[in-house]
Image (cartoon, rainbow, N blue to C red; front, side):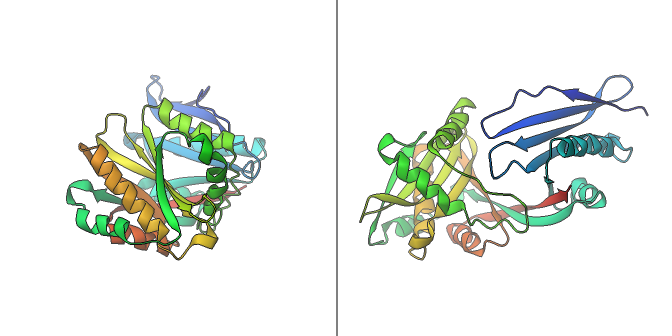
Length: 293
């Protein structure tokens, strides 16, 4: 069967990346696959491209995926990229396809879900009521308040040493513009961003934070974004404290919410232990692959 690959214009851009897109169609013009290539544009990650490739199950094993991949890899090379990363769920066709075409596995992510109907409210409350000398919690909705903006930006360095396996992920540099742009993106798609942060009472600076995104209708599942504690403040249980407070806040404000989702690298045992202790149960495993160009 004849497959045609068409390059598309993708309007989904932003201050930190732009995207290229391709559509695969059969001889009758029916779409049978697609590929999106995200090209990171900020310094520190401008060597990197991220691929999302999908092929209709009925059209697999006839080189549709291979042709889409060839287009994307050629574009990444032409743009001077050093590597391409892609994800595939364990046991999926993608987990066979990518290694067979030169991608190597660089990271394993375990996805978990907290079923809010089964959440242990007394245990979560006990976590938030345990004394944590030298710290207090604050929270806000949407964009960080102006009086906390500078210290919140500085606290993003808590993610600098986030375990990424052997992924050539580069460095992410946060400034106030990027923080506000991220919050605006969540708001634009109709979701709600909630942040809980730990304040160092000695100087009023933010020691750590956790972010949670809730669907606009308050139903379905919320998604944890970043959770991090600055190195000098680790060892005081702040990660567990902030996350427990965030869960209780979500339960109180969104009674129709079904669950909370998160993913954790297998080489991040500390965060995995926190999630296990708070009642998150594994749902599936995803591998991240990298093709070096």
